[in-house]
Image 1: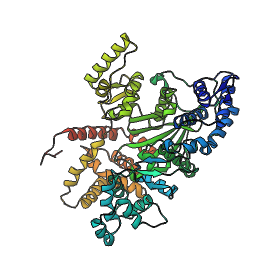
Image 2: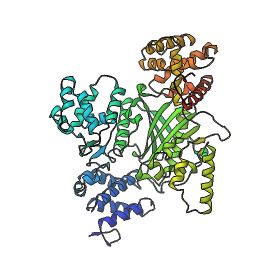
Image 3: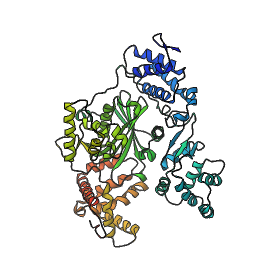
Image 4: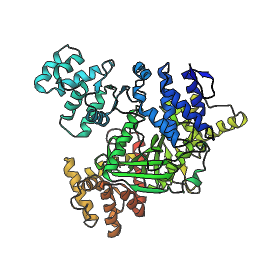
Length: 581
């Protein structure tokens, strides 16, 4: 038995429960009690994997919201020692996938994440041989990956898949490293290899180790920790008041610092069995650190030019509180519209989620000029159990997001009346599914009705008619002819000399200029400016591209019209010979 801070005997689980109750308390005596409890729990054994995880996440909360320097030092010591706790070693397998340093992780990592893990921890990344589901797909792939000489024999062997891999691979590498290395050697580009890898869809196991991915080790150093005397703000902010308030400081990070931030973002996602394409294909030339004050910061990360979508710009942000990752955010931006997704890590939910969301929208507005924010159905819970469980639809609704679909709005108002008459009423899961089927919107200027589609993803459908009009069956030749014609119409505008990424962007986007009705009748200066704006899609940072689009009002309106045309085409029932635009 241990002595509790008030002098009474207490078991370790009771001390942990007391610490959890104190987490949101920030009065004069709370810091001393928290410090004593952390010290005692450092030196006591917990009886279960669940209680060990609760202690770890409590320490992370205290690291993000510290009362004072003394408590912060005690918390840092507890986190630094956590992987060496005897109770953690005893319950290591039950703590798998917890993200605690010293525990294994199982996950069906996608291609870039798997390659990154194999580069960082090549001896510890293995295939999860307890998962039989991908084995038939992996058997078929091995005949291809092994090469023609061995492939013919492998296709006819009846050995187990693990036995096949062990026979083929070097003794100096793991089975996962072998598969990934052979995939990397297949002909084609990264997109081809990515599709093949993700079609096999194997489960990986990242073995435990003291230097592996860790939620605690991803706490980034900060120049000045902000200590708290009040609890996190649980209020519901007025977005129209909060969004126009700019962050304290925005700066683009140099390549070395940007690379460290990207590593931190990837590791924060790995330890929570998540993955974002932007973090996986991040560009160290397009990372911006947004300091919002009071220890709150956002690291906005852009995509490499080769992985960028056709028109919109995709950015993801790691959300930090005193250097501790507390969530992530993604925005797909075009013109003044942004499709957003937001997630607070479970440890930090129920606190200041609404306040942080409002501030990350303010950062988005400041960086990209976004005024119309949309949330797609998946984020709201459509075919997404986590979204339903977290009450995502009502989170956004209570902050002022509305559907543009009339039946959905009527259902929402009906639910709000039920809540008004009975505050204990909660929408059923069936109702939440119905609500989540349509986008939600928030317009910063309520008197403006924006008719732009959430994102004109089908715009690529408008390229095929332009290629057909070039009168040749070779699509590469047709694309070259489109590029030359667009260059002539744009007064000879070209990408900057030596910029291969800008040249690639121009090659992909030039047919869109030909799809703009009346483009050839624009003034030459506007045609040239439009071409240069599209070339900027391949620049090191997409911020310049977004700003040039915003400044070219005529091009912006033309792209909005293209988006509507493409959306109508995508919604049209298509049969043979019905693809005319």
